[in-house]
Length: 575
Image: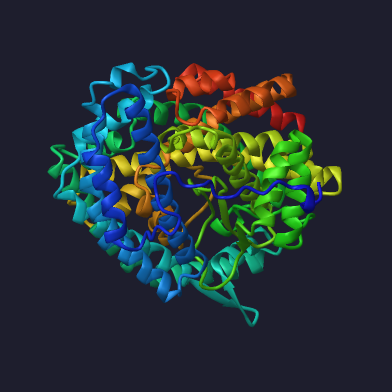
């Protein structure tokens, strides 16, 4: 489709707020909050309008704060963006929180609540009641302090670079060289990266300690013994428990562990190695070259759109819209924050994709993954309330991981020969199995962190080493490079910025595998179910969403075994 034929979204007309509403000024925001708090509700119609007005305010303020966050990540040296973020975290959010609490109380205590569509509003009512129960005013300044400290992680990681062959490389660019079939190069780059990371290990350990201390205090203030208990409530984990997570850890260890060992042993054989070192883990065979799906971020974008079009023209058009509106920042560069994300913009309904492309095989996965989140944002945007669109990760990640797998048959858009396409597909299926193992490792680690909030840096590293042995292949020999294992958790942004947001990847990966299993049997039926599920937003429970998508929310040993065996069969078909 030509860009001239695209219908670009525009910000909807505001009905409650003035068009020149200024999100940076508390004196502008507060009158609207007072209006909502003081407004009498005499009927179901009054309640429905009140909800629409509250949703509009949330969307406008939320989108403004999201753009500030984007600015701090696209350029971690942007002083004005940092100042704006600090202003929002210290002068706006703390003042918003007590009002939001009072508004939540007004909603759950409203006599007309029972006249709302109870099926449609079930998750919103449940979620809001939960917020009311766990809110404590003394936690407001602590949360603001936490937000500021969490942003330091991006600042530290974003500044990490190495010098190699006369060039300054970001860690993402350097990581791409670990796929080289030149073992000497891999070893040199690995050691340079480890040396650079070691320079920040104390700073990152100290930061983690500070974050754990604040989080534990927040939990205690709210009447919980541990941050784990508080965080489960804060994340709205109503549909599964901590024990379910432990059960999954066990299932993953039994079913995925042996397969991961097989994968690593196969790679060791392909590489012709007697001893496999950490710099060999992502290497390509000696006879091959690293997979290069694109030559630039623009090339990757063009190919992603073509790939999405094979699935559904709607998917391709959403990415074209984002390109036309410049809601994409894809290149890796010095001073840019790490990782990738899809940032929802709740007022206009168009998301922003951020990533660090370095023309690697992983970039393809990141782009279609975040593209899946973006499609989800567009499909859920017709939901009338902001709260209906605020999906938990167990739902959101099915959208992204499902897109990864369903695009696989069309990766010939990225790779122009069948051998490379199959190699990429096989690598991704191997990666998915490793995700199930790594998320179990990460989740188990976080449960330990917050069950033992007074632990030392050395105890933390010791626990990570222990869990690393339990959940990863022991084929790789780390002798002499144990430090890479010890500080490995410092490379995982989630532990710093979004605690406990990790097991969702495993549960969603299971959903995505089941979705792909259905896709292989009936493409059109599966795409239709996928789109219908994404349109729901968060108007269904997690099991209800999965059911609409045609899969199960199940992480028992028999079900995990069934899906792992499916992946193994797919891998064999690619040989």
